[in-house]
Length: 129
Image 1: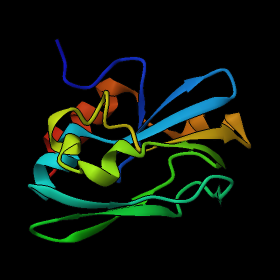
Image 2: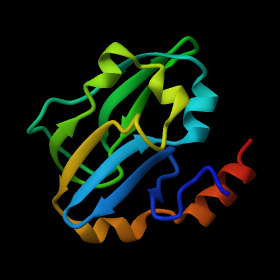
Image 3: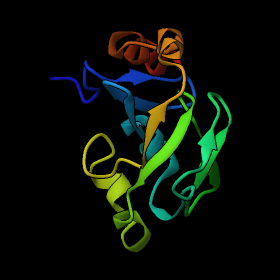
Image 4: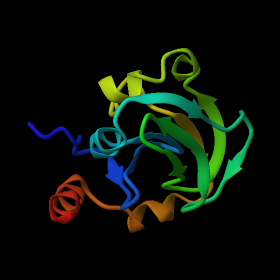
C-alpha cells in the first residue's frame, strides 16, 4: 500500500488536500515531513482567514529550517488542527491522518483539477533530487 492516499490530491510543494463536498482538508505530505526532519513548531492561520491557491497559509519549523505551507486550493479556513500547537511532532508521525493542518471551505472547486494525483505525486517525488 502506498503511503500517499489515492483519494488525496497533491501539490509540487508537498501539500495534500482531501476534498469532500465543499470542504478541503489540507496537510503536508510524508515526503515533506521526512525532508524537514523533526518538526518543532507549526504556525497556522486563524479561523475565517481566506487563503489563495499557491500562496502561503502558514509555516512549519523543523530543526533544519522554517518552510512555508502553500494552499493547494483557495478557500476560507473553517477549522484548524489545534492539537499541533501542543504537539507539532504529530506531523512527523501521521502527516496524512491525524496531523491535518486546516480545513477550508472551497472558493473554487475547479482549482483541484490543477493538482497531482497520488500516482503523479509519487512519480514526482521519485524523480526529485
